[in-house]
Length: 188
Image 1 (tube, rainbow, N blue to C red):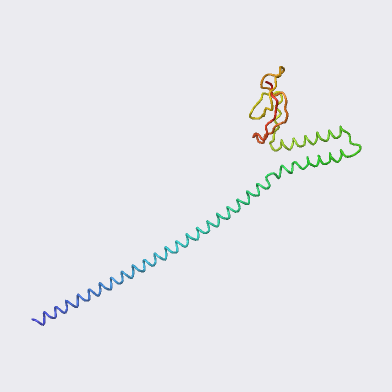
Image 2 (tube, rainbow, N blue to C red; image 1 turned 90 degrees about the horizontal axis):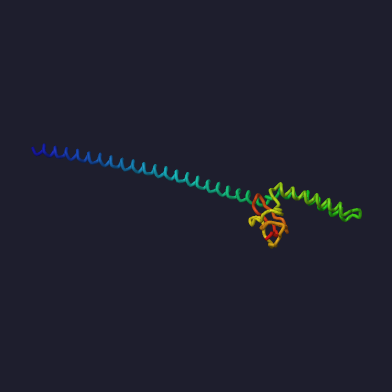
């Protein structure tokens, strides 16, 4: 009886040990699988982070290039903004130079010099008008403090009060914005 009991106890111990060994093996396999999963996730996260870092560096380089190109375009626009205006003024300058040469000749008359000056002046006015520069010549108009600068006010029985009776210096606007007011004398 004792032998049977001892054998049963041995079988039970053997079975428990086998179960414990099986559990240990299973636990080790689970731990190993978890470690492999963590390593795979870490690798995936590192690759994703590297990809985002690369994208961020490329975006930063693109922004620097865009900033540099914009700065160069802006500098060029400032530098050559008056290119067309200067091109339009050059013929007027040529006319002035030819007029000065003609005025130095012996056969030059006051009429021919005056005619040349009138043509050159008209040429300059055309250039200014082409670039939306308008002259302000308010003779006999009502004084407008937005466009005129009163030099003085004088009594004038021939004019209504606040009328411009003399333009001392004409004014100019550029695209309807005042560049220089007309300097005027106004009736009191």
